[in-house]
Image (cartoon, rainbow, N blue to C red; front, side, top):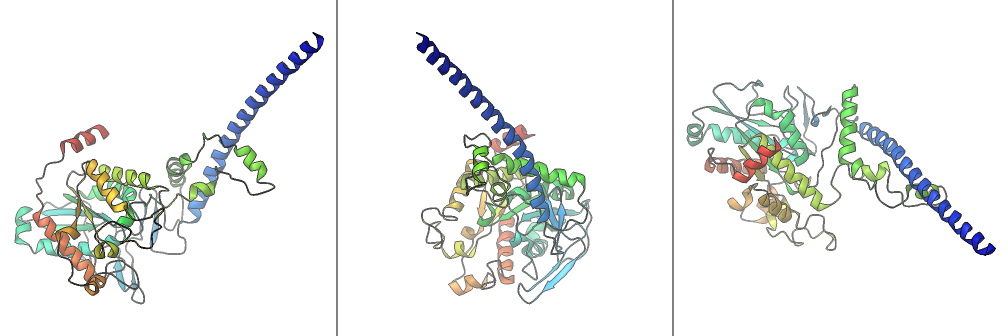
Length: 400
């Protein structure tokens, strides 16, 4: 009996010790993760702020929309890109066919079209950009002039190279909307779907509010995506890392890897569609236009044949267009594929001439002109009095 009591007491004490040890370990793990949250936040903010493109004078930091071009600037590059770009007083690409400055307030006799997009829209690789051509086409069209009551149509180019859908919602909210556009064109390529909102440009004087904006953005979109509530012990991983390489999952590097693009396709599609919904809710007269890439122009089927360089096991681009279009349709968003509405060039050499190959796959000046014709042709057939989908109207009402 004596030994039984001793064993029982030993087991009970051992159980209490293990429970206490477990509680202490869980508390230590929780405390360590709270500490890591602050440390990683600081590291992330420093990493992003250190890479705000200090080497170039083309960009300026913007706490609300991430970045914009340097106002009242211009540059010429005829060696590689063969472009000649002028930036207006608002930090966006100016219209070289209509260089007259314009005001934020919309004149009574003016119909305004705001264009959102990436480098294909900003057109830094062109002498003339496609939104400039569209303005000329529409103002020369008696049919269009009659539709807008004889007003002069001004097309404002808010395209920013390297950006995607998430950025454009902010560009419209904080910049384009103040110009009171009657119509919004969102022109995108498939490569825009995985892109996140990002910060860039030169920071000459980072204010506390700018620093706070970056910090909050990183917490929401990067830091909170790490596995903070996973069962994997960061304490053990950290101790083990002193002696060998271990799997630490809560690190600034792990979060920063997701900074420029979404880690998985479903998230990329979901966030991009959400951004389109936001833009639609801010302006009911919004048209979404898909600008074809050279791969998409040559092979219309969204299969591995279009992207032969994709990994069949884990394709990067194959199927992305189809999945995105299906998701947009499910959310009552109409994507206009202009390539399907217009005749293709008769041969592959003409197709290649639409792009700056072999320099890059952006539109050549010839390609920009053709795309502008496609856009203008569609706008002439578009009814400005179209009704918003009832489901979409209810969604916007709920969001507001």
